[in-house]
Figure 1 (cartoon, each protein chain N blue to C red):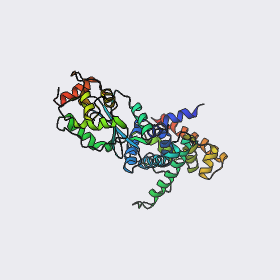
Figure 2 (cartoon, rainbow over the protein chains, first blue to last red):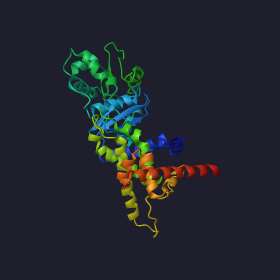
Figure 3 (cartoon, chains in turn brown, yellow):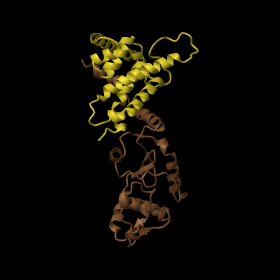
Figure 4 (spheres, rainbow over the protein chains, first blue to last red):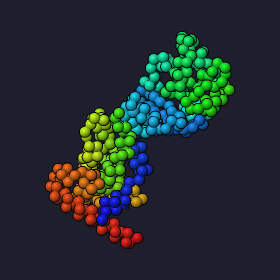
Amino acid sequence: MDTHSILTDDFGIQDDEIERLAAGLGAAADSVGLLDVAYTEVGSPVGALILAATERGLVRVAFDSTPLDQVLDELAVSVGARLMRAPSRFDIAERQLGEYFSGARREFQLSLDWRLATGFRLEVQRYLPHITYGSTASYAEVAQGVGNPKAVRAVGTACAKNPLPIVVPCHRVVRSDGSLGNYAGGQEAKRELLALEGSR
Amino acid sequence: MQTRFDAFVREHGPTVLRVCRSLLGSGADAEDAWSETFLAALRAWDTLGSPSGTVNHQAWLVRVAKNKCVDTARQTARRPSPVADVPERLAQASSTDAGGHEIWEQVAALPEKQRLAVALHYFGGLSHVETAELTGSTPPAVRRASADGVAALRLSLAREEGTT
């Protein structure tokens, strides 16, 4: 007689119950500074976005074309494994993204944690906000902008590896021939963002 | 790579919740004890989450959960209450959740020794020896209390199904 299964069925715990408790735990852990990384998912006109933050600021924005688990695994390795969903951390970021997507915001004012970027890539990514809302720059122009005009290809890599897309506007970098070039969120998302900003 | 804490919560969350509800009923106290247990795990994460660690995660959590439950029960007992004769029981029946949680009150209704044995050994997966150490009992007594407790639960569950 298998008494164990009879009882564990009766005393089953639903997944959504653990999710609910984990949400409360995430908020509590975040408020006392016990998390390496807090994350949330938000909807947007270019698809769901994964947002992740450390105590220093926003550290990662990812499109839902990358599986959540993969994004979180990478963060656990590069930042820390004390990682939980904690949406309240993102109230300000979410509001600014909402304003951006409704056309009411042209610049983000968020604390950013650049720890996922280093060297030349970091230099390029830090330069990107200088390309103003509503305009675009070519990869070659950005290379020139960072004082390394021959590094066009490296600029492309730096844009592709941007840990903070949308907030750090790598979508404003296009090919010299006017074609869009690649984008982490897909070309369609890049086109939509540029259309939103009125530059296409 | 260290274990991801969110995955750790998903893996062990149900077991810890069963232990807490066995000891405190299905109300807010059990959920508080559940959260306190995982916050303690976060604080100990440097050793607990280490890939080279030899810590038995579940046993660690169940021990901590038991202690948190005892603390919570003490605090609840100390809280000023309008009712003079609060029954001196670890668990209190809860009316905060209506949906499907009555079952935990059956565990709460067990005699204390059986309830502890069911919570820590049967739901928590601690050995008879570990459970005995933690509750100041002996392994044979834990074995008996757990078997009796589980039998009593099965009986009351069967009765309940008969009446509905």
